Length: 301
Image 1: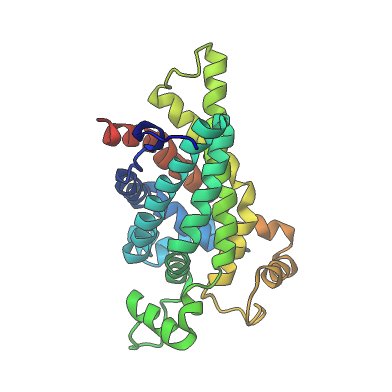
Image 2 (image 1 turned 135 degrees about the vertical axis):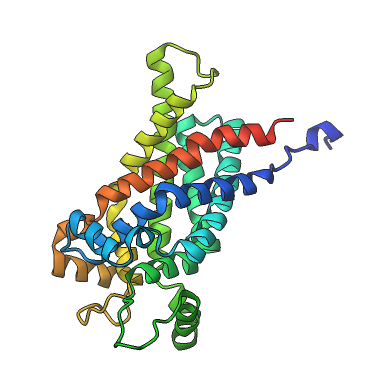
């Protein structure tokens, strides 16, 4: 039988500091440019006949500049901190092991890391927070004169009481489809862009990119990842509080897809893609471009 020494069974310690890095970077992302663009693309996905100009005007009419941060507290912060932590830790570990154990290319490592991170964050952290963030953006704030408008937490408990945990996890499968395809594309394309920049500049692959080059690669990865916009529109439609008597009473991905095509045509599946490109590019810059740099600084010994 083979004899195992301490050196042969030692494994790399999991850098749990990446949980804090992911939470911090994603909260920074959503608290700056992320939430305003998220509000606009959610509005367009839920109100598919509005233009981007209509979305801006109607959002402003709801409460000025503060309306562009509607749903930020607590739902977007909860979502950002939990999904960011899970994404960075999971994707980093998968990328590391895919590279060291299987010799996979940076692009393949990025795709695998994005798939694993997307699955983990969707089912472990995002169902409730994503749903409630969408509810907060799409629910009506107008009631009869003198009536009180329910607050965010009151709305949450009302849904929980009336529809149970399924009500606040509505659309989680569509969330998973969006996250898995989105983050595998964002990280994978970003890594491919990084490799391409190194090749074009004639530098060895071991040489690190400058921060401007990381931002460029992340922007490309984020923008091109928006090919999956139909999954985002499906997710918003399934979670929306907008009153629509034609919407399926118990929506599934298939029935919601048919409803969107029937009421808005195929182009309805791509409503909100312009602000989502902004969301995706900024998220990828924060989580991949800046995230790589912060991870290296935090985990440096």
